[in-house]
Amino acid sequence: MIRSVIRGIGSYLPDEVITNADLAKVVDTSDDWIRERTGITQRYRAAPGQMTSDLATEAARRAIDNAGFDPDTIDLIVLSTSTPDYTFPATATTVQANLGITGGAAFDVQAVCTGFVYALAIADNFIKAGTHSRVLVIGAETYSRILDWNDRNTCVLFGDGAGAVVLEAEQGDGTIADRGILATRLRSDGRHKSRLYVDGGPSSTQTVGHLRMEGNQVFKLAVGMVPQVLHEILDDNNVPMSDIDWFVPHQANKRIIDATEQKLGIGPEKVVLTVDLHANTSSASIPLALDVAVKDGRIKPGHLVLLEAMGGGFTWGAALVRW
Ligand code: UT7
Image 1 (cartoon, rainbow, N blue to C red):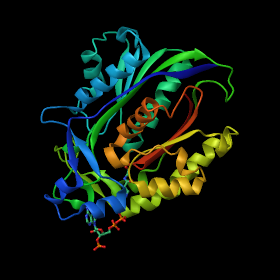
Image 2: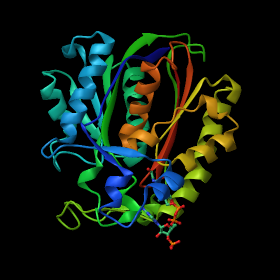
Image 3: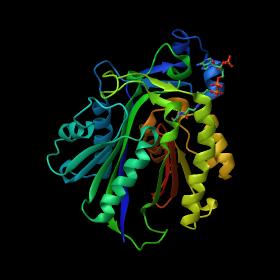
């Protein structure tokens, strides 16, 4: 059976750090409130003129370097973003050009905060179909561009950044002992659209719009739906929770992560947490967190890693990966 093995990983954060204290000068909020309700202490913001494709390109370069591959051998780029450079072309094709890649294909995926899990599942299926063998999967966002900086309910929660992995086809035995992406589960339910959305777009308002969210409703739904899909992916693959080495959730709110971890009974020592330093970077949050845990030596080859995300749409999903 063909497996998609992660050969390289990289990430990029812009230079500017915005602390909670910085935000308290702009809206009626406080460091205490943001820390207590979300676990966030700071976030990064892209410089004027620095686009999602710029963040994505840097993360991709680092991932390709980490894999030791010639960029030209990448035959597919799947980029997840809700903050593309332009309505079209796809940000993925700009990244492709920035990397000097002229062959293969490149496209964007839109699944908001679940985007990286969607992109990973899509890439895995292309590899398993045998049509592509080296796939770059990127999550990149500049949410600072779609935030309403007068709305304290949302502007304190998000940050900019990008993360990427390089997948390569490898023959596996078809068992859970294989390296690579072992399983993915994708879900969506469009009925919850009004709880988390951007109030603009080319076909509706012809504007970019701002992010709007009923935070506490999203919180409740996240804590309900995410553990369900996680139990499903583990049960379907006969993997007991105790076999999981690392749990790398979407980084939206430390309280959501704590509640999920408790519902799963996975143990806080196995949870990779970066929401404190990165805030919610939407589809970049998982590859950013993975990169931190790989570079600091926590995630090692052979480890079993459980990923999950949930976001606008609603979309949610999970992936089981042997590093
Ligand atoms: O990435 C995928 C999707 N996004 C998420 O997963 C986010 C999910 N939601 C959350 O993380 C949380 O619901 C929030 C962090 C957004 C809010 O936390 P909460 O504990 O659910 O608070 P709340 O919305 O119920 O608001 C509590 C109070 C309100 O005041 P009143 O009505 O009780 O007087 C808000 O106006 O906190 C107030 N508030 C703030 N106060 C200070 C809301 N934002 C702020 C703020 N600073 N930044």
